[in-house]
Image (tube, rainbow, N blue to C red; front, side):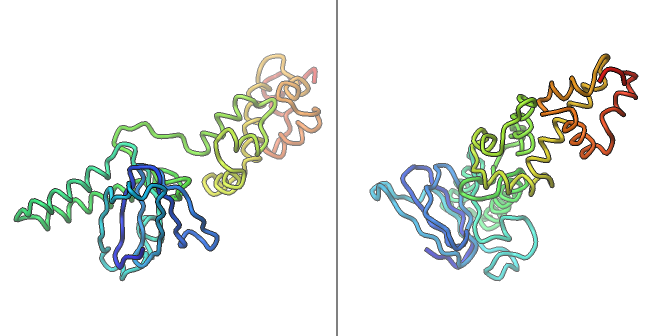
Length: 264
């Protein structure tokens, strides 16, 4: 399927598989999640396959043009409109409500129909633009999320990683285990985390352990040896090396500030 305008459509039932070559040269078929919206730039080819053809139906769609886009993704502006394809999750049916209202306005034939449709379209495009700012990659596996005002924000990838690591600072999970707990592939975690945070997963884990080490070193009676053991470092020497690499000072400096430099 290929359209000369921008295409926004929704699937509400299971059993559809798709392929969108614009995702990449190695794009493969993928299952379309119920309740998701897809946005295709003009002239973007996509294929739909049905496990149950008798259930095939258009659950919601909008065709529109962007001013000045000249039938191709824009060079600037919100992320979804700079791409050939984006996927959106709409758990609160916010976009669905707007699209159904657009359909109702068209059917009623009201005198101010064009003005109403334009306003509703701008509302829909605003939802898409805001969703792209809330995280996600806009892919079928990691869609942008449309959320209503006041909805609890889902923790970003940084917060998710921290939550897992902080529960096991003495024996932090490796990349494979961490990816499994977060329901991500190792490749996705390894590439997304630096892009979103500016550091690698390993660097973040080291930082979290050193941050906790600073707290422990400031306690009365602390020692480099005991803190190294508490946090699972193989030796006080290795602990001191990592601590200095992260903070720029040796752990003894923290002990001296706290007045407990003896006994390590």
